[in-house]
Amino acid sequence: MLADTSLKQTPLYDTHLQLKARMVPFGGWQMPVQYEGILAEYAHTRQGVTVFDTCHMGEFLIEGDYRKSGLDRLVTCRLSDLPKGSCRYGLLLNDEGGVLDDLIVYRIGEQQWMIVVNASTMENDARQFQAQLDPSATFHNVSFLTGKLDIQGPLSREVLKPLVAGIEKLEYYTFDYFPVLGERVIISRTGYTGELGYEIYFPWDRTPELWSAIFADPRVAPAGLGVRDVLRLEMGYSLYGHELNETISPLAAGLGKFVDLEKDFIGREALLKQKSDGLKTKLVCFKSNSRRSPRQHHRIFSAEGRQIGEVTSGTFSPAIETGIGMGFVEPDHAKPGQTIFFGQAEAREAAVTCNRPFYSKGSLKT
Image 1 (cartoon, rainbow, N blue to C red):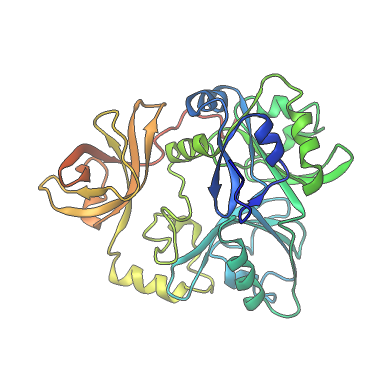
Image 2 (image 1 turned 120 degrees about the vertical axis):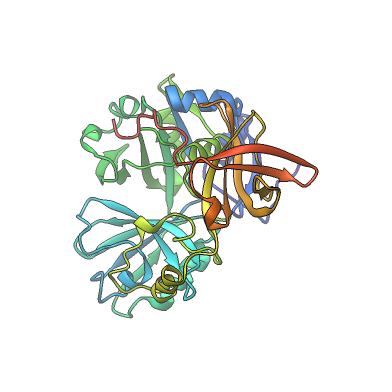
């Protein structure tokens, strides 16, 4: 089968083909969805260590005072007290309070920042940053110069120790520069799996060398987008294009703790009005009463049979051996412990609403 030339490729594309990965389009890129299989890759991540190719993600470098540059107005998270060497999750909103993207802000220095954004929204994000930042600020989109690998799992620290001296000093949501294969690179203790993990930002063209060096340890296995979705869903993490988009506010998505309403930012007035008027829908997590998994766009029904919402994400959870999902429902049906149904009019499955995360036994903060 010929590759779709309209899709971008990471520097590890040939490596994935050699490993016989199944490749799929994702966010404008050709990406591996699975190698050995989702259940095997799940077990490797939850019990051992896996590596994900995340070179498709976008990275922006910004220099300027957080307030005078306009950066503070662009993101919902508080930057005033973000220590150097730390990172913070936040959101980029439009004037109506809808989410243009979710992102992570890294404070490299007093006035130096790195913003990590999603692949599918990277170009729009770059335009928004360039339009809103003060001319005194410098902005560089280094996405196609920066490779990125995510090393995830309870053994990730042990695997990286021989390659990265001092990696054990990193605490959750902090980062530092480390010498790796002759390069001075940023490594953060972050991830999207609910396990102990690290993200390495490495020169694009040398990323295959880093991949090979990590895989010199026989405990390491590759993992694709398929298991990544299962892992993030078990943690109740949002995925852009599912739980987040330009018409969904962070308040409706249950991400209010990542929004500092005490500061000024684009979309703030719209969020304040939502808070005052009351939300029309809320994100809910739920567990199926069987092994049947919900799917995106499945309808959600009340116990009385009335449609009250729609599923945004769903999968089978190996951890709790049942179907799990997230979706938006009318606020009265968003409380934990309520019986709901998902599916179509002719085939519905019972479920119970619950708190997130679905999985809480991981090595995330060990």
